[in-house]
Image (cartoon, rainbow over all chains, first blue to last red; front, side, top):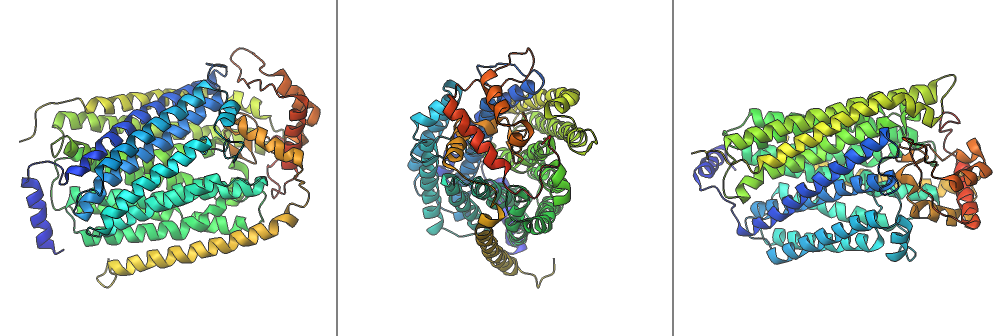
Length: 475
Length: 141
């Protein structure tokens, strides 16, 4: 597309009555609403486990730590999946310039996924885990009880069916419509997500192989195919809010995801240092994962560059803020904090400590929570019949951005300090303390983390409130 | 970026790079699986250990503990607990749960019978014999 026609298109977009371009894009709305609801649930359970870190017997035995943590992490994954799906249903018709293949199927899938997800959480909370395992067919094919993949067998099968229906719907839309780089990358990422999830059904008796292939889901998701989805969503929003030529944005997108997979696939090796695999993984894993910050740095450059070169002032400033925030926070959380513990000589001491948790929190928020919120921020006003929310509503949304983001920075810094203390007292000292003695020394930092957690929750409430702020519409 | 570096160049780097590194990863995976039997010759995966692994999973032990550094960070590392504490302590500890000490982190009572407790111990013994390249740094895990 030439610069002139891009500018003309941007001008036309600014004049057009604010609404979605294709009616079937409206199916994204329930997905985004469910995502936000589950996000709130995730943070509530985060507060419970944050409190259990300092008051060990809080809610015991009604909700034990392992149950609350499982709900916290599973809700995280599920709300992000709802966000990805909503984004797919919004983005693909617009990029393909045609209606969704089957809006009806998308709505049926939504309810199946939501009900199955809710029943799974009820099962976690209402039944002892081994009883749930027994009732749901874990004896037929044991897959439960491994981090992030705790879902019962029937839920896992359900996820596969929902994913297949979703991918069928989007792929049929793409096949008969315009094929842009953004939509192709989005679909590659989503297909990759579904394919690597199949390894959640692989659970060898040999613990080393179990752990080895467990990472084929967990690492190849978050440091692989999810980044394709993330890049596509960010590129889509940047095309819209900056009006920069699509050719330039798509070139960046390909370069970023090229670096993601070039570094990230062999980078899986940084999980293979100490789980019983050959020692050569320490070399492969260290070298390639040291390069993993590169695509995230490019993501930051990309977002700032495009906003700097913008050809229009989009009225939705909150969405632009979220897009820039995603660039910065994903680089800090996934890039910098990931790098901190990734070299094998350092990882030898930091592996399995609170330093891992600190990286996890900032990386998940900075990369995936924020990019979904970017997408929601851009699309929700359109789905509600306006190009952007009122300045008053955007003001609340931006405040929510800062409160949530600064709170996660606080959580990350306190957990980093907790991890450093743990490494020092338990692993490096000449008279090493036991795990629980070490934990006693870390208590003040866990209290501080809990306070930041409450801060995050209040930011999330502000975010929710921003949807109900009407204010004066912009002319 | 210069004009000669086009979108299709970037796209080709993406497809070519991804395929190349994924194939390399498959090669390393094949090598790892072939090296494993001798690399972990000491770790004997007995029937009892296999049953113990299933108990480990269905009680969601990794929801609080780490095992070879993976899991949750709420309770001690158990990859070397067999060496640190020994079989009798492990069984006695699990039978005595929860401690009900006010404010203290609590471990649930799983009501395992003696055979199941032996299976858990067999699994933890197997885990302690895996060649982890000398991790953890000391006995405290």
